[in-house]
Length: 336
Image (cartoon, rainbow, N blue to C red; front, side):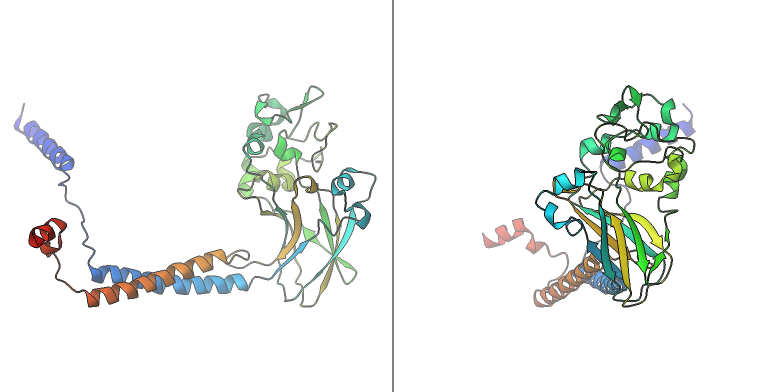
């Protein structure tokens, strides 16, 4: 063995020894009272302004929320809402009025909100076939779509409970007897449209069974262009969620009254769910969400309080650093 190899081996053995003995060079900060107080003080001075700015941005978002699932059931049917929603012979048309209390600058986003709807249920989330959504009937292994896999021996495209339960309420908006145009393009993620739903895959044998779940799909339009379905297929993690329906690309003035003509098709009554219609503006923060601002203010305030408490304790019980007489075993020996 040459001297060079011996030197390399010795170096490796030395490095391994230092590693196993935890003796490698490392940064070992000493958290003195001054450093701890400074860190908490800086956190307070950073988080509180950030939280206040975030809250101001959230409060600048104008939002109108209207729950319509109960009011859109005729009075004689409110005793048995499930029979009403399942009876196709009864018209489901309904009109609602939404008053604009503050100027809303376009684009105004339209969301439908569902409460007490567990899209995160394990069987529900698994009941889909991503490869079928991309390749269509060419892909045959759709066992994950149970119990909505086949109908009369023919495959269902798209299969699974998620697609089967597609939201199918519809809305039109009227202001001063003129219908507001709703843009329903580009409401889904571009990555979903381009990479998860096939451009040549069209619905087949969908909602043709005896038990109809939700909305139907146009069999002539490829899945990549049916953005209602794409939005719905991106399941929510929480039981209360909003999904984008479209955009109004006109400004709404304060005191405007918007007449909403809707068709109340979707059944949330069988599981005690709620349906709401939401009109909202947006800003650099997104939609209305006070949680982030409140969280920052709470963290910043807590940090400032801790900094003040530690400062008072440090001033009252000042002692030299590294005094070994404060160690527990030394205290015992001194007391003995």
